[in-house]
Image 1 (cartoon, one colour):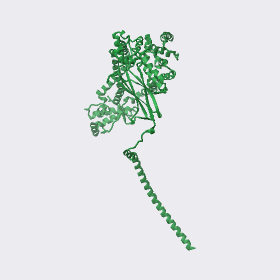
Image 2 (cartoon, rainbow, N blue to C red):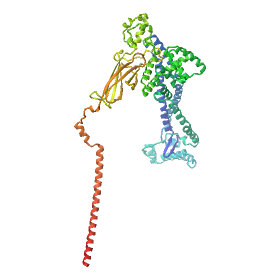
Image 3 (tube, rainbow, N blue to C red):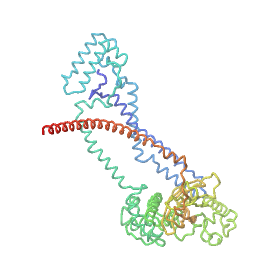
Image 4 (cartoon, helix red, strand yellow):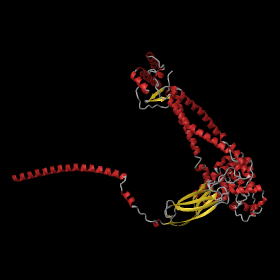
Length: 631
């Protein structure tokens, strides 16, 4: 049987073994990331399933962690259609890749670019000269170009047969083959095309052409269209363009705290989830819900059913109204994605310089996490077992921070506090231990400055340093205490720098569990004068822990800067020619030499011209003398 064929095209060879290596390398481009995705999904699923319920500080928080554990197990990525499809494709491609590896490892015909004349002529290594000639005649007659005029594979095979015959009959060619593996002797480089030889078979031409047309005309445009259609929907921060447009429209200077739930409810990311299936039945359910939330819900500015429904669901959470399973599922989707939406709302306020609206969005996020609304008591709404009537009797408690700063003994002495059971009081103390007590410090400076002054056109840095006084050195903060938030909530802080005129200079969300963290805010210094800015540190998890710190600084005129004196050695270095100057000087010298040579040749020419002029003058004078003599 004929060995693995190779077809010569433009001096190169199509090689089946080379194609196997190429195909194996191409498969690895998909299999390696796919296995990484599978392993990460498995590790993530196992990690999410292992939620530590015991770390709950109160009974309500432990119940919340149990729900999270149960929900995450049911929502495991291992059960999604995308994961199962990818796993099936990965398994099939792995089997195919293993088959390729086995073929390359154990099939001797798949030695890439090997030249074996015995194999080409299909004879044994003990064949005689007569057997070699007989095999050569049969093969050459079968694959002769005259018998296969339109078959380049047969023509390439005929050339290999001639080479093989030469390698076994010619002593020099045979020696070269035994020594170098090639009858022509040592080769500097051998190149083949890693494509299968059937591509040159006339019987495959139509199939190959149709496949090429399908890929170029159908598959490639479809992939480009799919990618563009998906990417054209999403903008910065992975937020849909429709949502950005909605924020630009709904967030305006007149928007207050009462309109923020409506702005959140109108996000395009929620439309598909809260879209009603039966509009008439949905209106009836919404009417019942409206009766429960209308006491604290502002009058809607927009009458779109999705905006109104979403706003009512958000208010139901803020007012702690129980919902049916369908509405609970829709509200859960809104709450889990609210963090990204609120960050985008702050970014919109930053771009449009809406300071009051930005602060309102930050404070709304606190209320959303703690499930409380405007007018609710910040102590009783964020701590377990504490009631509003109890807080009214605590004259010395001026807010959540003041209550958290108290020692356990001080709390025990508060009026009506001992009316709680020992277990309930213990849970109150445990919840207070989770509340961060932040110390904020701010300073202004110019980087790499020596005189600690700010001059016009300097790049000013305002550094805000926050220290958690409730943590010991080396300790880290845990999740925020929010027993009504449907997910684990790491602590976060909005750090904003603004002017007294109401302009936002910088705003960022900082998520750090360290005891001490800092945030640098940079801006170009204003004109000469005295200024005062405000550093605001706003919690994204608790109500009543925000701090505002004024920062004052003075901008001086650049004319007051000390005169800069250049060191003598630095001045000497400036006088030294650079490499470019040296190269240019060398070119100038060459040009000057060539010009001098040119001038020398020009001067020689001028001398010869002068001599000719003198000769002409002498001849003219002689002629004049002769004429005078004749006269």
